[in-house]
Length: 350
Image (cartoon, rainbow, N blue to C red; front, side):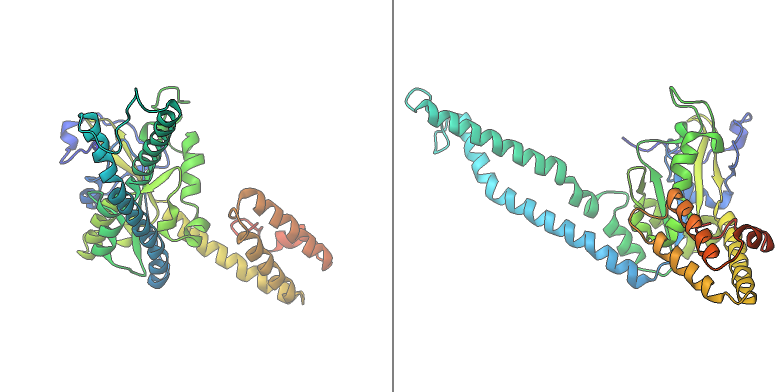
């Protein structure tokens, strides 16, 4: 199914634009060349991956090797299976050969065995070519963009722009317009809380390279990533405009506008505030002669955040409880200490 795109849409043609729900706002016009490639039914997330280029290269070689291996197996199977299928077709056309079944003269057990074997063969070939076959095809040949074309055009960089697109849900769900939805839009939508917020979590973006962020809710739009990188190279857009932003089309095919939530700005502020809190945290413990407690806390957060399954809300609560016990073991009143540094809000694991 083709993408629904609106190119050169003018506000003059849509005098009554639908309201944009919080926390979104109108997308800047400088992003129009990129937004014109988007599907208006889909929700998009852009972010800048700052992992080292060498790290991204090592990750990318894994799917390249896997898809080459799968493609080789499929070609090998086709090479050996094609003559057999041709003989079966010729037999059906009454050109007898070794695959022909003679119903009257052959034992029933032989015929049943041959039919069962062919059914299994047909099912096996259907499954590998129908289910597995599209993997290497989309990896190497899908247009307007695919992983190989993207890497060929972009290469490997220390700062790369990634564009994710919603999978299995879309703009109508986020805006509360889908059939059977709650009618809540933007930050009030259940999809905002269960799809958007986990996808833009700063800890997740730091822990994983952009290529590893594909999951059941989001796929990568490689064509859009190529376009975004070209715009960056031409300095038509800046990194800040693409830094952790959520895009959704507010309206319909007849009219509307792209809206954006630039949550990367919030992350930058939160990161600065968290850094200040950590410095204050360490200085206060040093003043109390408990600097070793700071390093124990660092080890605790690193251990919990690197556990399988990610640094979930439940694990963060557990980390906070373990931190309280560490303080109690050192004879420090946790609540009083928290009040002295202005609370632990914004600090990792707290």
